[in-house]
Every structure is written in structure tokens, then in C-alpha cells.
Amino acid sequence: MSEAIELLKKGRYYLNWTAVLDELDNRLIAALRRDARASLSQLALDLAVTRATVRARMQRLEASGAIAGYTVLTREDVADHAVRGLMMLAIAGHGSERVERYLRGLPEVQAVHSTNGTWDLIAEIGVGSLEDFDRVLTRIRKLDSVTRSETSLLLSTRR
Image (cartoon, rainbow, N blue to C red; front, top):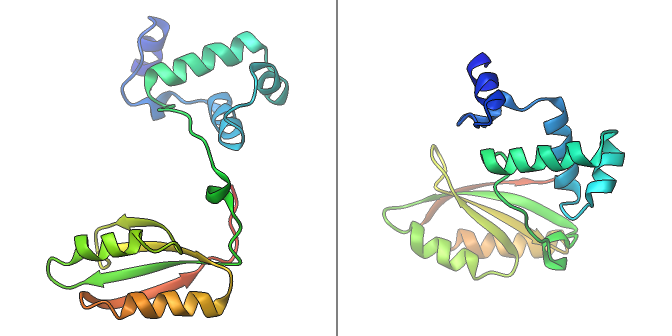
């Protein structure tokens, strides 16, 4: 940690940026996660620091790689689905790519993740009702390469 602080004092950035994030950096990142378009003035007000401090912190976080970029959420990204869940899938043989392509083509599937361990793929599913959720699960389970699955409903989400 002291090596990282010395590098920062010299105007250099420590490669392991997580070692040098302080409480203000974490609060700034949290504020940007809530609203990446917030003005410097608003961020400064929310964090009880000056605009210059916010600007300097953001520049340092960007230069060090702690902040890799900013993004836009579309209406579809934040659409409320009455029923949401994660479906973990075990895939036989080399069928993962084919199953992943199929899943990405389903409008109810919000994202598909490859993973290690017991499960080969995890599908994030969002639909309007439990009946719709059941229909999607049944379609996915019927795929030839799917050997096993486990599904968890998402009850609440905190951002």
C-alpha cells in the first residue's frame, strides 16, 4: 500500500488500483453508478467536496483504470419484468456455442454468461408472469444439449 501511495505522489498510478481507492473514491464511483451523467457540481454537492476535487478524482480514476468507461442504459435495460430469474445450465459435449446462440435469440433472455464449475452457462431471464417464465424454462430444457438445469427466481435487486 505504501508503494502505491508513493507512486501516486509522484504522479504515477499503481497498477493494482484497488489498493489505492479510498472512501471518497468509493463514494464517487457509487454516485457515478447511480447517474454517470451527473454534473461535477452535483457530484461535488452530493459528496460534500469541491468541483476541483471531483474532477481530479475522476481523472485519476480514469487514468488508473479504476473507471474503465461510461455507458448508457436504454429503456429496455431498465424495463421492469414482473418475474426475473437465473437459469444455470449444464451442457453435454460441445453444444455450448449452439445453446448460447439459441438463448441470445430469445427475447426473454436478458443476458447469457459462460462460467466455470458445475454450470456451463447462466441465462438471465425476465418475463411478465410466472406462466411465461415456465414456458421459457420448458423451451430451454427441451434443447438436446441441455443435460441439467437449476433455476433461481430473483426476489429483489438493489443498485
